[in-house]
Structures are given as structure tokens and as C-alpha cells.
Image (cartoon, rainbow, N blue to C red):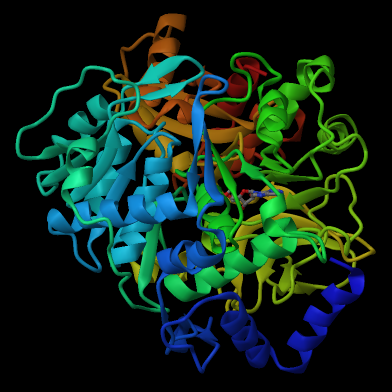
Length: 633
Ligand code: WT7
């Protein structure tokens, strides 16, 4: 996009923001009833509400599929690339329509109706997208649970949203290893008596038990249902999906997004950041976002954003270093990928393997590179730009969150100059603000806590089943503003540099982990009395998990027990939650009122024991000396 075109967006917004949003909504989406109102919201406690395009009706799957059939029915909608290089196939928009309709009819045949919740626990295969789009087609609310989560995590998420139907596969295949999805699901379902149907997709062919009456194979029922299913008219504010994400306290929250605003936001941001250059055609690009559909990036930029725009999207069911660290570039070349979007953690891991793995594959077809999920260090940014992108591909560092639905801060290619390590400037309609810990607004170049002062269409609408928690979590710290939980610096050019979470959330390889979740998994072990978990710097993952554990009286610590506890957490939550360091502590540093002083634990885990600061308010300052002496970094 040219700078003047971007300026035009900002000017139109400044002149008449409601008019701008309605015009964009009408232009970019197909409505059954076009909306006549745009944003209707207040972040104030006494009038708290968020609505967009409230009197419009539409259907997301019709926007992602049906409206393209006349013009691009034979074009690939999805290019599937499996775990083994070259194991894959293309799904045209026409085939996507049929598969999604059939999937929708299978769901209907199991009694799924508008508003019902369907949990999806799948590998990165096209059937995962079919299931998501099929839910949207009939107005069911999907909750995708990442295939790397444990049976416990899965059952907790099924129970929280009261799903009665689960979609899963026999097993997944990642890096040559099989992941027992159905076995995990069976364990989870022991605690979920209300799940009456499991739709099973065959992925690996592994032998699995099938529960008569409850489990049905997709390939058995696929041809027994009609190949057409009319899309359900959905009010713009009807729920679209729930996605669980970790917070600073308690269990993961069910982030709820609704139909119209979310779809407009992902459609518009995809187009602005990854769409064709002026005069170009969307079908000339092949877009590869490496995220899993178990995360928001997969929802917004593997499925809805690209498909709504009529683009071709890659679904990759493998890992960056299998069969070797050249996989991304070998596959990009073979498939003809032009736009590549991945996480800094993957970039750092590949950078370490050396340039040859990149340069041995021709990358001349690549034109745009994106990153997402965590701050990218300038060294990794420069490597991505120079080595992968040969210095000619813009690097688009996109800052956003599960809660924001789509990207909020990022350089629009062609219109905004980049700086390595900065997500640069807010997209049109995004109003960031930095505040200090007292809530005082910081102007100009400053560092503080990142808030957003005005609603945007893609904003989450509630925490499923707990609206009060939604308000308390995001709008009570700094009244009248949405608080992101991130720290941020704004430089003299008005560029934003995200510094990382300022709350008790750890960002491990771009995945969010709540310290409270890991702590509660640890204390569930019979030998553990107490646990405190903080983030630690980690060369590849960005942040690692550092756990302090106090054992029950009479229990002896040992390396064996340390490993047992690490594996315990892995089993309780999933591999991404495995502590990187686990320090046994006879006691934790507490104030006289019993509150754990996490600041001290953080400093020790960061390898800065000299900077623990004032410990005089501790009930027993000597505790800190022991912690420092036995620190693992
Ligand atoms: C947190 C949100 C957005 C989809 C993937 C993660 C961090 C995300 C960036 C970036 C610096 C980033 C923030 C944010 N984050 N993108 N480009 N630069 N930090 O979604 O799991 O909801 O995590 O990820 O800390 O709050 P999520």
C-alpha cells in the first residue's frame, strides 16, 4: 500500500469513524442484512458494553466460501502440507464448500444447533478447518483446543463451555512422532459425561478404540449426508467461537469472539498486511502462516482472514526442523509460497542452525515475511530480513493478542518504514496509550503499560460464562481503558516497541502460559506443599518457565524428584508447560501478610540476584539467601 493510501484510511476515520466502519463493512463483507450502525460501546463500569454492526446479519462460512464460488471455484482455497515433505493435496473453493456443507450436516445429524458448543481437538489438517467452518455455517460455537494439550486441559475446556460434541482424529503426526489424540480424548471424556458424540477423522491410521453409539468416523458418514447446507443467518453479535487462553490468575479464560466485527477485522487486517500490492491479484499469492489452528493466529490468519479474502492458505501439519532445518524453505519453494508468517521462536531456532539450510533453497518467489507471538530481537529480525528475505522482503512484525481478534500494531508494507524489533505503528482505528503504574497517561517518547482507549471491531466480547471476569481482567486496572497486560516503549518517532508481559503471564515460544496454572499443577503432586512460578530469559523460547517448589515436611529433594515433577506438569497441562528450571526451596519469600514476593523470585530467575531490592518487609529475609545460594541460573 502506498503511504498516501494509508493516510487516506486515517483521514476517513478522523472525519467520520462510524461512516468509515460501515463503508468498510459493506464493502468487504457479504451481508444478509447490511448493518446501519457501527460501533456501540463503553468501557465504563456503569455502562459497560461492546457491540459492532449490531443490526447486521451475515454468515462467516458464506463469506469465506460461497461468495467466491462464481469467481474462484476451481482455485485452491487450502494447500495441505503434511508432516512428511510432499505429503499433501489441494482443496479448491468448490471442494471446500462441499466438505464444509457435509461436515455441517453431520453435526446437524448429531443434534447440533445454533448456539451449541463444539470442541475441536485436531491435527493441522483440512478437516480441522472444515469443522470450524461447519460450526460457523450452522451457528454452532466452536472451541478449538490445541492438540498439544493434555487430557486434563481438554476436559477442563470441554466442561467449562459445556460442549456436547467433540471432533478429533485417531492421532497426529509431528516431526515423525505420533500424538495420541483419540487416546487423550478418551481419557478426557471420562470426566465429560455430557459429550454424546465424537466425530473421528482418520489421519494416521493408528488403531484406536471406537465407542459404539458415541464415536463416528467422518469417512463413514461423510457420504450419507447432503452435499449442501444453507448457511444460518447470524446476527453480527452472535457468538462465533470460544478460544481458551491463559491469564495471570486462575484457570484459562474462554475468550469469546462474535461474528461480524471479528470477520471484518481479520478480513481487513489480512488485506492491509498480506493482501496483493496495488493492482495485484490475491490469487497470485500463496500465503503460509505456520501457526496451529489451536491458537488465535491459526483462527484468524490460517482460516478466516485468507479465505474471506479469496486467498490460498497453506495448512502445515509438521514442524520447522523435520526432516531437517531447511523444511520451511524447501516447502516454500516447492509449493510456491510468496508470503510467509511465523513466530520469532522458530526464527531464532533456525538461525542457530546456520545460513546454509536457508540459502540452499531458492527463495526468489517470497515477497513478504511476517512475525507474530512475542517480541522479536533485532538480531533475529535482521537475520530473517537479510538471510531469508535476501534484503528485499519487508518484515511485518505484528503485535496482537487472542483478545484482539486480529493484528493491532504492525507496519503496513509499503506505507510504514520498519525498524528491527519494533511492531511500528497502530493500524487505522487502533488507539494505543501508554500509562504508568498509577494510570497517568504518558505522552511522547515514554515507556509504560500498553492500553487501548477505544474499541475496534475485532475486540473480544466477553469471557465465556463470566462477564464480570471480563470486566475485572481488562477494564478495572485503568478505568475506561482496555489494558493489554503488555509493557511497551514508544520512541521519538511514535513507534511502539513491545517489551513483554507485565503480569503473571509467561510467553513461552509465543505461547501463553499462566504462572497460576503451572503452580496449581505442581501443588496437585502429593509431595509438593507450595510452588511459585515465574518467567526466565530463554535464548530460543523467549521466556522459559522457572518453578520454585517447597516439598511437604519429611520429603527429600533429589534430581529424580525434580525430573518427576517436570514430567508431572507436562502430563497435567501439556509439553509447552514443562518447567525449564525447577528449584527446591525450603521456603518461599513472603510478606508478613503471607503474600509471595514474586519480584524477588523473578530477579533470581533472571540471573540478577543482586537486584532483588528491599527485602525488609519479608516475614523471614533469610529465605532469600537460601534461594540465591541454590539458584539454577
Ligand atoms: C501476547 C498475546 C497474537 C497471536 C499470538 C499470541 C505477545 C504477540 C507480539 C509481537 C511482541 C507480542 C504479547 C501479547 N505478542 N505478538 N509482535 N511483539 N509481543 O497470542 O497467546 O494471545 O499472546 O503475545 O505479550 O500480549 P496470545
